[in-house]
Image (cartoon, rainbow, N blue to C red):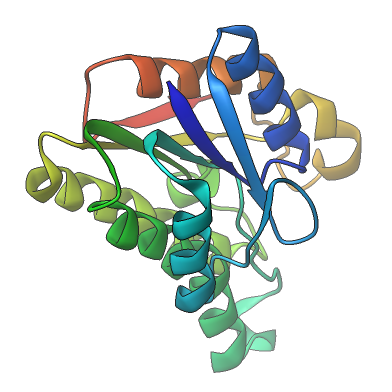
Length: 199
């Protein structure tokens, strides 16, 4: 398959690139700062240009998204809008514009996270974003067939536990290799509208 990998230079994106390429897929990389294509997916015009440059695709995998953290009483409307734009709208735009550009039986695999189903203090923006994305995937799957859309929802990565483990106290970390395998299952499998919960 020819796969567009968005967020390819991040910690997860790097592992995904290695995993998918190792399975014989041709990978086109995209990110804000490096890769085959430079793209900020929060800008619809850049998403359109990304697809123009990427050419024919069988699948799109997203490993990108950013949200602010803070207590509800300390956050303002702009923080919630930034989180929605940074994680939700960008991924929705990738699907919205990509629906007419990928193969007829192609797929999209997005990224959410555990905080949508098991929130912690200071993570209300992340919880909002993850919950919205998972609801979007379930609804979009009804309309996109025969194209597919799924989402991977991991807990904290084992490789990041030293850095972020306190925020995810008591939650089981998940290895990046296991997260990458969920993407493989989504891309190479037949399911649609599925949330792959890990950890």
